[in-house]
Length: 484
Image (tube, rainbow, N blue to C red):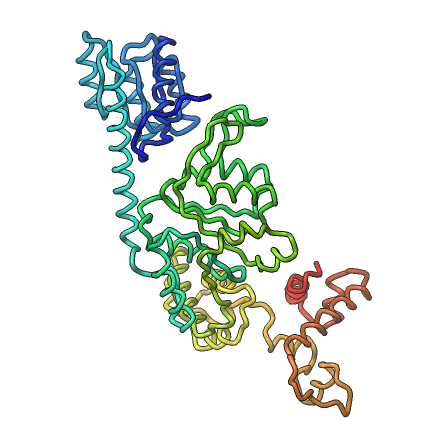
């Protein structure tokens, strides 16, 4: 049975304290005291080893004896400030070395205690020092947050759909409820998550994003929950997980549909109990975080197929925010493009003033299967390549448009060949119930591309030539239909 932590303010929980003293008994005693306060404690027997530890991992508070054989506490604090200017120091000094303590205060030490020190007094000073650091960090974060608070400068678009989206963010943000953001890839789910955080009461605290599909299960578990030294091969030091990093803030679990069944169970426990355990640790930690999840998959369908836990789905789907694809809000294309031209011109040192009329027409005709991400990539390339003062249509490198289809398939869209292309036979008429032409064309495109690959033995260049397509367009369609 472990000893329960002493009562403490939540803001001081789980800070990292480095105790430096050449007397082992004092180091171990202070480690026990601070660990009971809920802190993570590192130990060093001298100034040199303390400096090495600080270079390996961050430390919030340095508690050091002033007189040590290899380096004085004053010199240690001086080097510690060079490694991390925000580190806080508390010096332990004998009655005869108060001058050194005063010198340490001049260097930025928060306070000092005299030997023989009172443990309760030291605990109070540690709490005060960590509270001072927390308030300083919070003030800095709040100043940054206030610059963007109350606006949606990064969410561009004035369509009815985007106005509804912004209104929903305003209403959802002040709550502490878990949010599920859905939308196709490239629609800007992380931007919406950041907007929710930026309009919330947690905006002065961290926003942390983790891509659940980019890491294998073991690495994702370590990233989320952290680990202790020796938990697995290569775990040479304790490490905070992203849940700890996001304390009192927001964590975004991007592409949550890619999370393994085992990780789904562990995440469910965090959401239910707000507690977790580092890998290899025996002590549980609490999690005061707001969770936002995002996905481009149909989680409801995955639940029905048994690929996603139903109980976890209901836990994360408390408040749903859906981002419509760009093709369903075409009036937002040009405002997003114009903002992107301005941003990338500044980043790339160009003096472009906007889009030409031809470029605007070209952008407006395209379907944007890759959504906002694709649009911004197109604009970035155009800005980088453009030699004039405005982006011309010729500088835009787009995927195939309907005009491209006409080139690739001859006059497939002309009245003379439309019947042949769609696959209707002479005498057939449009069904009375209507006809999804786009879907039918996609089926035919997929079939022709598959046949071309079979006929050329999988040689893509020849298959593209067989269909009268550029190789770039051919690759686009292979990716679109999952053929490559």
